Length: 128
Image (cartoon, rainbow, N blue to C red):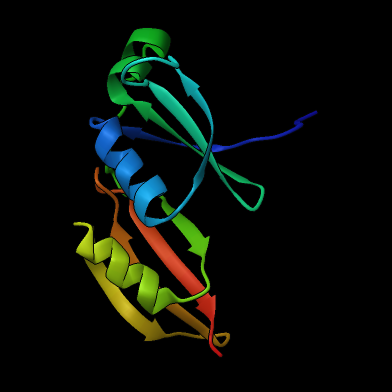
């Protein structure tokens, strides 16, 4: 039986990725290893959702995985209070704009940026 899970994003620059996910998107850190120095793996939470960052180098060394950061085979989706404000903050912090904020179906407002290693990050909010 599965008791919990998380999404693990591989990166070549974990410090830059942490600046984006913690500094811009305000995810709270819940775990890191190693605790001292530059981490190889960090877990963050957002209302019960767990996002992990792992270095591609650690994936190779520990698991024998040839991780390819930034390959958009998936996207991270975050529900936010204000799509436009979070989009503007992400782009101001250096994230590449993919889809500017726009009204979409189901009374949603959406935007998409790329994280530091090219991961697609979709921002969604219900229109007021």
